[in-house]
Length: 430
Image (tube, rainbow, N blue to C red; front, side, top):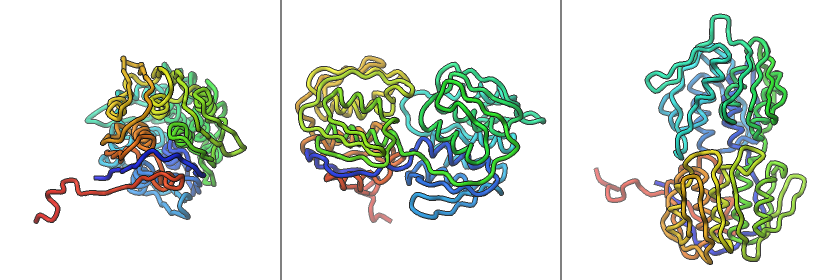
């Protein structure tokens, strides 16, 4: 068992370097299955989700070389049409991108239903709708998604998504890149990692336009070639450190960011009283006085990201006055509020709305990470609280944050990662 122990109450100060975007990398790595040749991918985050995807690709026959801490060479030329290992697939939500990639490459995919964070149902019906529009037959059988292209291959089509879905937009792109004809994805998601996936595929020879708008056009090509690509900085990791600086106080320079991707987060933290300065590829967050109340509604990009609502909830818990968070993406993503309340926060949840009454101080105690972003919120709360906070179930956090302990220590935080036996009383027995 791994846990974080935090001695809070110390302002953060210094510089932190943001890693490559998790949500882009988990789409780009499966996309290498479509490429016959070597892909050199830079700025790859070293997180558990990425390590799982690399194991999956390796077991499917990919040749993978690590050139440096954040640079990989991946050659999928000899990858076979194989079923990805179920024990690995079920541990990561992004494994569903293997469906689009394998369907596009081999005309067939059999992938176990994905795992990942548990904060309510996240159906893949829009993914299936897209694959069926391209001509595939899709069925759910024995816990697997099984997709088969017709004998003459996938055909370009017009796909109108019923709801804005990041995962479906990316998965349909993967399936359509090598299809015959032109595919249009309407009501497409516009997140930065969707643009990054399109840019990666285009660098390898695809013909995709419109990524970042409501309509994406994919003109099918015969094949993709190898090349070099660098993944964008992680928008949510950057936002997490911004929220940490605002909640805990101090002066933090966050480097290797794209400030435009952070505009909704920047605007909200400024509204709450943080002083934020933007540079070309960095952003500085200073907070000395008391935070002010604010309201947030999560929305698809460029709105306020759902992946940031738990972190900003910590800021609101320490702000003066009453704040409201309305979750506009997922039906249930407030499980972490009970953990914050154990630390002295005053949060009342009513379905998709959290009502937050600011308190003077949070107090350290034992809490759990309910999911990836909720775990980051627990860490921020522990940094801001008086006394000692222990965060358990940190495997969720390590799915998406590279070297969080080291980065926070570099900002002056007192945080330690501790590994203990799952059952201490059994240690040494047998």
